Image 1 (cartoon, one colour):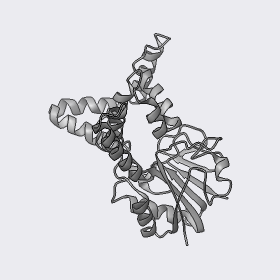
Image 2 (cartoon, one colour):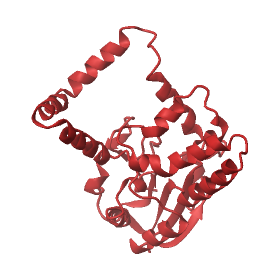
Image 3 (cartoon, helix red, strand yellow):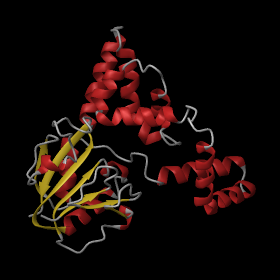
Length: 278
């Protein structure tokens, strides 16, 4: 089986072709998916991407899925995971109702669900308001967040808190900053020139525009109905919702891309859907 994992992040597998804008493993190839998929027609039996589609605009998403369709063989399977808009909306309404009635703990759950709905679409700095929420120690509704974000929650919190904690080696942080300065010298120099030439207001508009185009924000959201409609318009058929471990892909659970070894979803907030190329 020839299988392709797009926008893999840290969830790659050596038996697959793995692409990501910023590779974090030797088995991952650097590629910007906004430029298409760099393989010939009919190359793969499986195309998979998790929490990638929502980073494309509503206008660009159909073209991306047509690219997925193009590189699949006839009879091939596409598997897509995205944040589940329907589940988010239902939990938001439940949290709103319970918080309005003063039920203990639900004010915090309501605040979190509002962040899930909006923060990654409107943020203007990396991490946005979610990052600030997760700086709390202790986090008042930690178990609720873990139910939503699964194994990713702990890693995100550790990364956020590491930013504010002193490094055990007093020199390491300054050296890291120095290394980053050398790696990004050209961009830093251009930023300084832009600050000199532009007004403060215009420079801030430039900074926000750059951030919002770099890929972190969510540009659209999907539920079961809208995702199936989008896949069908891209040429796929037999759309069906799956669980993290359920799939038409041979040995899917063994690859552990959507679930842990025990079968626990890696991202419980996901909508999983598969479809076929006729």
